[in-house]
Image (tube, rainbow, N blue to C red):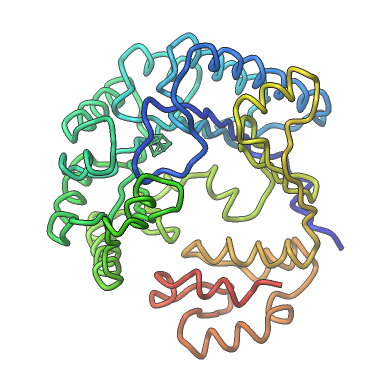
Length: 384
Ligand code: SF4
């Protein structure tokens, strides 16, 4: 029995690896905007799409498109148009969700009109905070007011499905200030919120400061209180938590990200983009120059490839599925792998249930509210 999910058409992700300036916490694959490199990237991206489309099965339609980065909206309008045209080469399912990530410091009316005209129906705005001093501490290129102006512009351009990204547990941020940011975010009536605890990663500006002893991460208890505050305030506002870090009004859950959390197939184009199709997970070269060189030479831009064995596929499906508050349905797992989840993972399920971190009922398995903030510890138990 193999994984039946691989007969599904993939969701499409396109990585735009350029930003105006690197944020101090960022370890995403992004480099400074440079006109000549952007042009070469666009040529390579088109080639990569054509390579994929050459073997595209008849009748396949992507259920969702997500253009992320980097900062897609940092591109000049004519370059952004090329990325949108590459995405549009792929047949889309009727009503497909199409998201573009936007940095409030890079949005204007012309770009918004271009996105809407192309068929983009969801924007994800990286607001991060409504405290100007924290935004500047994070190295963001916009103020809180600019974020609100970008939000209003997006609404005026007709976008009725907006996500707002926020970061908490920023050194120096108080619980009170975080609650203020949440309330200000809610006053914008977002359809969707992503709420992440700041993670200090090696190789970033914050990583270097921490290593030199100049930056202290927020204490675990405060981090947890901030997470609980987000859960509380968003629930009061009728915005439901559906994933460890994601909250949405009913019907506005991000369909593209649900594909990842359900461990279903996706195709990633662009430097550092990952694809998961036909039982293989592969990741493109991260270096933009290398990515361009490979595609210009007619080569495959893949840097790493891993074959997903059935054991690995099942474990990843459990780990990713547990991120969702709905958890994993017994029936869905059985329909996909032909195995009963309760038999495959009998031991970890028993241990974790006893510890109060997961719970099972007639439908399936999910994290408890105690398990949600310590999910990574739970996931370890399912690794093959
Ligand atoms: S805008 Fe986003 S991708 Fe770009 S540097 Fe900042 S956090 Fe990273």
